[in-house]
Length: 358
Image (cartoon, rainbow, N blue to C red; front, side, top):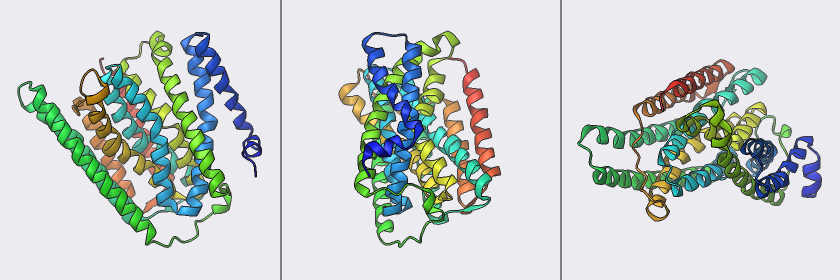
């Protein structure tokens, strides 16, 4: 099956025509609102293609490696966006996007997946031991992100000490994430997965086709996300939104479009282990990989070093999201009510961030 025929099978892929229009819009200096709309339209089919390719690969490699692969590729957009913001010196926006991405994965994406999967299949099962390990990793990540904030509040202003602690925490977080990836790969190699239920509902692509679609769609998605976020401030300025709200809510929703499609599609196909793996792996990668890389990267290409000091409300939201996610994940079962609960927490948190003074 050629990739061109593969794209033409889904009418949603016609929205890919928005990509050349984005190029024209940027070259002709069209309004930021129009660029924002075109880039958003282009992201929709790319996220769907990324989800289909990941599901196809997961059928060959197993749900854990498939979920880890998708989270790696899906977070490329967030990493690129954050790097550009660091280079521009928008460190508060970067830190807000880190927090917002974790919250979006744990509450919005997982909540939507549990809701859709539960409404379609009732109670769904997944690997409790793997979910428990992922939940413990997230607890570690939240503790690591909390300590520099508490340290900064407990001492007199000492930026050098805060930066040194942030660097140390970032290094330990990178090592911890590396150990988790090693464990996941070794466990997957020793684990003979049973046939996944309803696997016939997912795409049946050769590995080569799936890899090509995955790589191309990820590169294009990262570029469009960069364009879209570049037009966000101009688009929402007339709405009176704060930069903090843009970073913690709008940018993560855009950047996590790929994971959202993948996780919900997997849950709808009764592949809840893949869906949970996508949400949890992406959250861990943001906290334990992307954030530390940005801390060290700011030493080389940022005008100011990025630290890991967040505001108190961000920390409270992270702790609450991690706690409720762990309670839901540890029993190895999910239903649509739990999905609704996660979505409710996300909406409440977003409303609080909206009214939080800039």
